[in-house]
Structures are given as C-alpha cells and as structure tokens.
Amino acid sequence: MAGYPINWGATGTPRIASHPLYIKYNSTPFSGISLAQVKADLGGVMATADNAEICFYLSWLIRTLNLLA
Image (tube, rainbow, N blue to C red; front, side):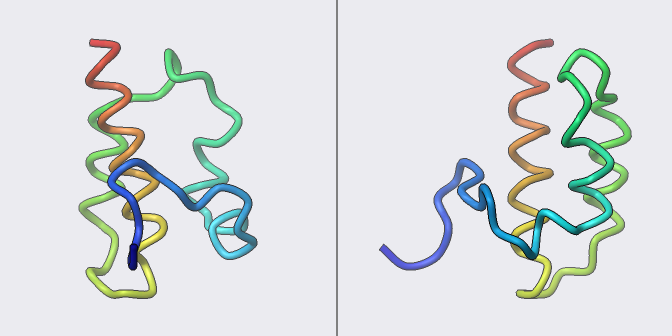
C-alpha cells in the first residue's frame, strides 16, 4: 500500500524526530497536552507533501486526545 496509514506510522524517522512540533510534544504525557494547542499548531503547518509526516503526527495526537476526552 502506498502512502501513510491513517494512524501515525512515521515512528523513528530522522526527519520527524528533529521537527520542532514533534520535539514539543514527544516527551509530554497525553494528559499534559492541550487539544486546542495541537489544533492551532496543525493549522499553522503549510499544506505541502514535505509536511505530511508532521501533519499525520499532529492528527494522531488530536485523535488520541479526543479519545481521552
């Protein structure tokens, strides 16, 4: 299957591991992450193929935070 799965599948890739938004959230428990802030961060990402990984990661965070709400 080409592309990315709906659930974040970019674990361990060096490109995302150094992205500022990944670094911002990757060491914070879900309980300490603001859904509104993640949505705002996703809204500020340029809609380009180069940003697909961070969009998938932030979308995964949003889906997970919604499950916890």
